[in-house]
Length: 209
Image (tube, rainbow, N blue to C red):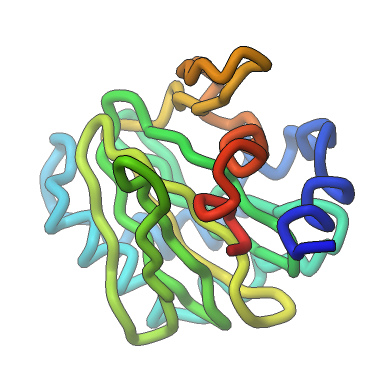
């Protein structure tokens, strides 16, 4: 049995986590995170998103209290939000991944703070790129419509910091139906992302390949 098959059987069909962790950041975390934001009132550029997540990753006093090692599901906890941005700490355990998705009209910046996570982007005609993200390593950014997947690589848990601007209201989850047709399913921006249908068709694109 492959790693992707084990992950499929373990995590397929899970319900989203409790909403309190995705709507109400601790005040001291929100205050400390807000202090790192650029001094303007507009949406952040990709360069600003990358600099912001790097600055947060360098502040374990902000993200370590948000870490949850949960082998049952990926945990994502809100650090700060306002009209232009939302910022998250994500905790990843073995076998946890998002499947391929986009962030609708929002730009994204993400960086590893602990352990290692793997980012993939679909390649044509088959396969996927693979970027191993580690602390003090590469910062990834993408504009509206940026399609990728993110998954655990190393660590118990691995931790990554993600920021979205404008605020992440919707995501597009990519799924393949029984006829082999790829479709984009619009989900709430705080819905837990999880899909194995693309990996079922092309194992080289699996989160855990």
